[in-house]
Amino acid sequence: MSEEAGAGPEGSSSGLCWASLISCFSLACSYVGSLYVWKSHLPRDHPAVIKRRFTSVLIVSCLSPFFIWVWKEVTGIKPGTSLLALMGFRLEGIVPAMLLPLLLTMVLFLGPLIQLSMDCPWDLVDGLKVAFDSHFWVLCLTDMRWLRNQVIAPLTEELVFRACMLPMLVPCTGLGPAIFTCPLFFGVAHFHHVIEQLWFHQGSTASIFLSAVFQFSYTAVFGAYTAFIFIRTGHLVGPVLCHSFCNYVGFPAVGAALEHPQRLLVVFFYLLGVVLFLLLLHPMTDPAFFGHLPICSLSRLTSATNSISSLSLCS
Figure 1: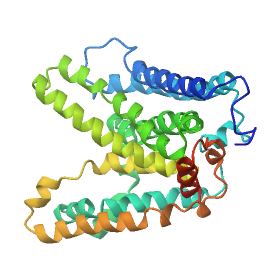
Figure 2: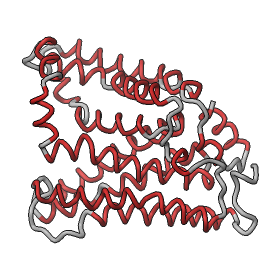
Figure 3: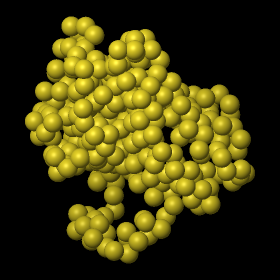
Figure 4: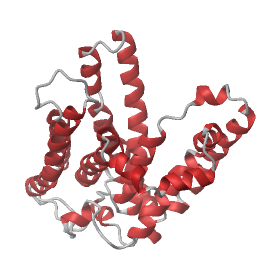
């Protein structure tokens, strides 16, 4: 590994990994902890609670690059590129980075999208009229829950849990393992919903914890996907748009699909979407579309296995 992308002479491999893990854990705790600095007995969907949490997470998000800077100083890592570029803020390849990951995610959700279109009372013309209606967008932008789910949460979570954590994990684990390590912080961070559900008695203890386990599993898998997108594109915008889209569509209603009047057709599109997604996953995220990938310079090739993994992800 080159000196520019490596740790300083004083930093051992184990010390680097400890610094990376502690930095990521501290950042995750800061993000989740910021949600609870405001004392309130109101539910999380109350506009006043949402506005206060907007303030908290935006402050943490603005400070999150500081965690990377401190980590760089402690470990002696020299990325050889600007901090913003490392975090996915760059112009090279930005148009395909906006379009291709979102289209790929829509392919995966082909079944749910077909299901929604079948059940929607609007036809295509009505849908387009709504989409281009300024009044509709004013309603969305003044709805605190919509802003949280479609804008603030995707932007801040991807910034903190992908753009900031992955550059700190990659020199320790390599690119491949980082894709699966990073989502663990993201999944655990969503366990804070358990506190609120228990506080407001939103179901039995067993059902709340089962729901939390399911949400952890789903968010961990989704986090691995957006981490893959971030590494393959070198851009933050793709993961943010995919996150926003998935928040809008929600988890696929498989049960409803199996009971749908046109069950065979809906299930066919569910399966077709998964097959097409697997076939298009690498071609539609080919780094050739997105230019130089700054994060690939951080890959710490500690073994032949890591070397092959890094090469396949970065080319």
